[in-house]
Image (tube, rainbow, N blue to C red; front, side, top):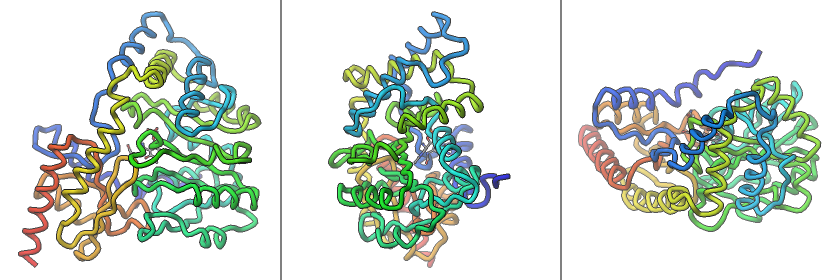
Length: 392
Ligand code: PMP
Ligand code: GLN
């Protein structure tokens, strides 16, 4: 029996839930604590769901996912990664989280080791453990833009290593990998005959340059499983639409899990997802077309405001939805800092600690508010720091 999410992982969202509760009660709380786009799901997507309901797409469905949606995902994936896949390689799951769970169930045996990078998204340890896997953490280096130390990767491999699990653009650091790092990880996986699970939920939000996926590297299609979703790219976190893309021989296994866990996904939601992807590909959904620019502008504004906060070191993200602020020199625990910041200033940000050792003593600040609110957040943080500096 795998451990429930507990301790560090569940603590991660305490500040968020406290803040959300207070905001719901009418307080002026700024929530920069969760990676949930502040924009509503674009209207054409909602309209497609309604049309799906109207035409009665409410029965059991293709277990692998509607062909039209899988074809759209294949094209969307090609646009993001540059790699060509067929709809047969795609299995639709209930969000990237469910897809990740399925990938781990398919690829790991009890005792299989998985190499993951620290810091990592908080559900990874329990998702791996639920499949009987054993996680080995390799640190990302803050002084090299949170890129991995490839020597440490080599030192982490054992005869039981089955897979590398990576997430670039990265949550929480906003780091991306360059072609060289990617090629080195791919060569590492090939050398040791490992699977590469690549969580690419932030692929559409690369600010500087373009997204690079291991799937596009020579020989890697045979050992790469992409996990992704529409949660971030389409402001659809609550619709729960995600997928795996793997080599064709993996499909019967992912479909078997889609059968046993889900018995397929709701048809009208898949209609909406298809419309969202097709609309984005045709550039017809304005909010999606401008999302990258919106987050980039927020990143720029936030970094300009957070860069010279006394005692704090800012890490400028290249992609994604988050900014990391190193507050270790202030001598507070990040959790206490975040709780007190919410308490005194009505600003909710997450402590980095639950994401792993490398993120300890950092704050993760989401870019999920308007530039005006981000400016107000910076003013609140500055006031908080000034007050406590005086008190110290
Ligand atoms: N992976 C990462 C890195 C995430 O940040 C998240 C949270 N959005 C997920 C997976 C799960 O996303 P989804 O909503 O698609 O389940
Ligand atoms: N992935 C998002 C984040 O990191 C949402 C997580 C969640 O809902 N628990 O904030």
